[in-house]
Image 1 (cartoon, rainbow, N blue to C red):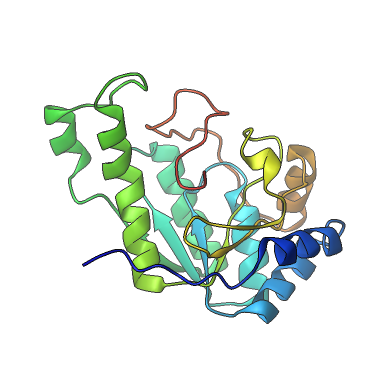
Image 2 (cartoon, rainbow, N blue to C red):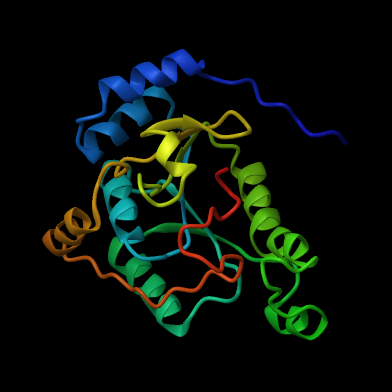
Length: 214
């Protein structure tokens, strides 16, 4: 079967208007607006640093919003413990997606290739892109909440609070203009945990795009 082409819900002009209108809005105001636009939503997370903020904010507006966790299988013990704590504390409605091959099996046949290795594209496809596509195909969201922020990568500097994914899903980043310091305060104010011992096996540099968004 060929790939289903999703009809875009919004034009680029409408996206631009939303970004202008909500540039100074609070994350909660942004999230409420997104639900008004369409309530078929998901939140994606990998439980990297500061993810608890987006999970708390969205679930405070809609308690049982589907939370898609694409686990590469290479997270640190600290990240897994952090994830379990956040899931429990926020009573999250988590849908877990993992690669079709275990990390132990892949370690034998491929390992974790360097970015310039020929196998890197296949590795990224296996541990990140395929599970993500599977998740989106199953949930078919019209709105996708994510914790992208300005300053993380060159691509992310260009998108704004509202943007369209390659498949036409409305991508919403409520904390887009927030600094680490503001997020630190948000986590503290809401008694949320954070964890910095996070590992992304597809990235050598912190400011490299992960592949799901570009």
